[in-house]
Every structure is written in structure tokens, then in C-alpha cells.
Image (cartoon, rainbow, N blue to C red; front, side, top):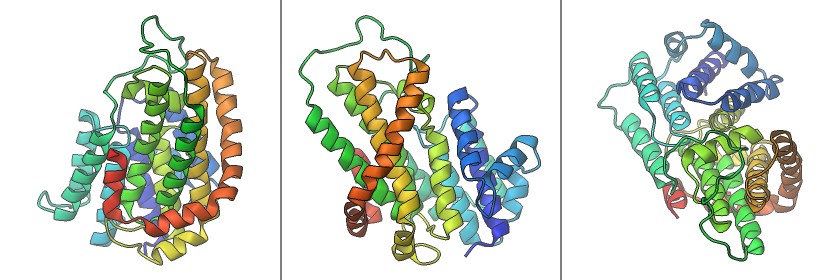
Length: 328
């Protein structure tokens, strides 16, 4: 099990990973700050770590130097890769950060485990059926000609899909493997893409990223928060291996926290997308944020009704299925 010093060091590395992409929007950075503040009551304060990273007190190198075992260094690298690949294959700035981190962690280019983590993350990122692109504003009115079709919306089908995605992402939250956490945000992105498509919009990655971050569900922030919860709870495992302590049994004890949060976020993102694209992508920024907050609360209540389904899904999932789930 990692010591508190090592846990704090890994969290510092995760914050660096989230900030590595210099093109991240203010909304994404605000989501990261909000995440850090929301977890401030933890034994290791993420808000303090966030501030220490911004101030330069915690660098990639100083954080890496605190990790004593090869296992801890590899886990830190896997999780950083997961954060950088959250919304697609790393850009040049993120790849430069990962190269720097690999050197600081003394991970050889020949490390099979590290290379497997990179390959798995790239497969997950590539599986998202969304073109790359940068949206000017998720809350901007839709331009003429972007609606591809006008057909009756299968609302019941979309709502069922949203619930199934919420159950799946909640189940992934329970698995100790870092690969499971890597898949959560890409699955949420696919859900938004599917809702937009149903309403006649073909969305690019930049629009989906801005839509989610503007509402309050920052992509990198969600990834960092997911890893942080597992790290602080002592339920974190290597890419395909079991948890450092306890595995799924220990994770199940924490169902009411991480799984509920992830289930609720996925539920809220999906239903917000229905309202947003159903309304022609015309929603004031304040309304977008307020609607997401209300849906998030509702989603966490809906989790209570589906807790058994989440635990059952987690019990049947294997790490080898995760990449395939994103591809489906």
C-alpha cells in the first residue's frame, strides 16, 4: 500500500497531467479547481496539492522522487497517461509532459507495463467515434446547416441508453484497475455524441469537451477525481491487475461515494444533452450550469434505485472487456 507521502506525490503528478495540455479551456480548469475544493476534507487535501503545483512547490521531478517502489511509479505513470488521454490521443504538450514524467520516474522505454498502458489508453481514445476539433463555445447558438436530419426522437430509447451508461460507468468506478478509470470519460463523450446524433447533430471532440466542461463536468477533472478517490481509498490497481489492497471487495464498501458520483455525472450529462440538443443548442450559460447541477443531484438519487445493478455489473466485468466497451 502507498504511504501518505506517496499518495500526495501521485496526486501532484495527476494535477500536472491535467494541466499539461496548454489549450484547455477556462471551464476545464475551473472544473479542476472545483474538484480540488470539493475533496478538501480528505486526509490528503487535493486543494493544497493543486495550489502547490500551481505555485511550483511540487514539480514533476519532486513528486516522482517521493515514489519508492517500482509499482508505485508505474501506477503513477498509468494514471497520468489516463488523464492525458481523457479526451483523445495526447497532443504535443501532453506527450512532452509524459516523456518528462517517464524520465523522472525512471521508467525505461523498454518497460512493457508502461508501454501497455500507453497502448491501452490510445486504443480507448481512438475508439471514440468523434472527430477532433475545437468548439468556440458549447453554449453558442447553433449555426445554420448543422442539423443533418429532422426525425422523431426516440426519447425512451435515449433515456434507457443513458441509464445503461450510468450503470456501466458506476460499475467501472468500482473496479480497482486503472484501465477502468481510463474508460469512464470516453464513454460519457460517446453518450453525448449519440444524443447529439439522435437530434441531427454530428459533434466533434472539441464541442463535446467544451459542452461537458462548461456545464461543470470537466473531462480532466473527472479523471483526476476518479483516480484520487481510488488512491485515497486504497483501492487502486495496475492496468490489468488487482487492487493494491482488497480489490473489488474493498471497492464495494465505497459504492456510496465514487460509484454514486460517477453514476450521477453520467446520468446528468446524458439528460442535459437531451435538453440542450433538443432545444437547438440554445441555452444560456447560467441555465446550462444550473440544469446540470439539478440533474446531478437527481442522478445521485437515481443511483440509490440502481445500486444493485451497478454492483452486479461490476461483478461481471473483466479488465479485458473495458476497451471493447468503448468501441461498441
